[in-house]
Length: 420
Image 1 (cartoon, rainbow, N blue to C red):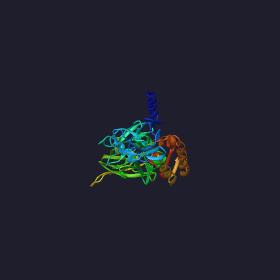
Image 2: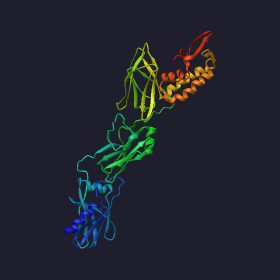
Image 3: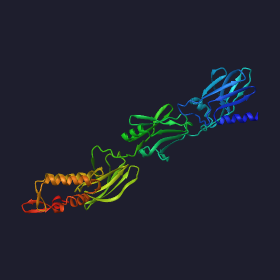
Image 4: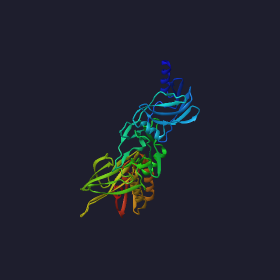
């Protein structure tokens, strides 16, 4: 007998067949998982089959071992064969009403005897225990960050660095989904029903890049409820409708940077003596650019994701009455330099003044083509307008020997005419 009981426990551990003796009759259970939590996740089927041998069965039920009077009847599916779905919500709620414990399958035989299976342990919610629900962001590197969804402001996260979003919960019958724009994506439960995951596959990421916002919904009492607040993906780049975008910031205030989906903002100090202090921060209070002074025509760099941008201080306006303000323009790095060089080339090409290289006249169109050709060949090596002047105009085109005749016999150096 002792040897037989040892084999029974071993089989239960590996979730194969569970046997128990009751006189000459025996009960065999199949379908018992090695780890069981009740209530099971919504939509889960956990079919347990009881097969009785050695006697004729009159009825079959299961009950908690500490409350055998509360019975859940099994359904007869064949001679001496019965079945129950532990994944059923009502069954799970009834068994787990007293918290964690164990249950047995009881059998009443037609000869008046009773036999039961060995006890099956499970984890359930204790009486009065409040169901918990926590949200975590799992990164591609395996990191785990707890997210708190705030009711009055969005919670920002890096979607491109995330592998999945998970709920860890003790709530029975839990269901969750994410709504991104007009699309919905369900959280998938794991085997033990404690963790629900939303994988950041290409469909989810594509939807997030489009709207930038995710709202989470949970099912309660058969009704879907949206959680207060939202999750927003930190933009991997700016959504600029054109090559550049202008925006105005009043002194001692801030403004959202265009295309940043209300994540990056620029703060402006006092406009004084032709300069102003600026800084850039994020909606979740991270400083991206420390405070620094900028003059009109100056630029600062801003990296978003893997994309580099430049912010140009286009104009500062001092008002006699009212608030002073500054006008900024933002574009991908290189845009402002390229635009300025193009203006130089067009000015040379369209001038009707006489141009001399040493003492020989040269055509403005040919000089413009020379500058343009040299610029294109050196473009990858140049990051600033000052470098363009030095490397292209002075060293290659040799504009130091070029003059422009504004009136007869009155020539001025090319650099002076160009306003370098």
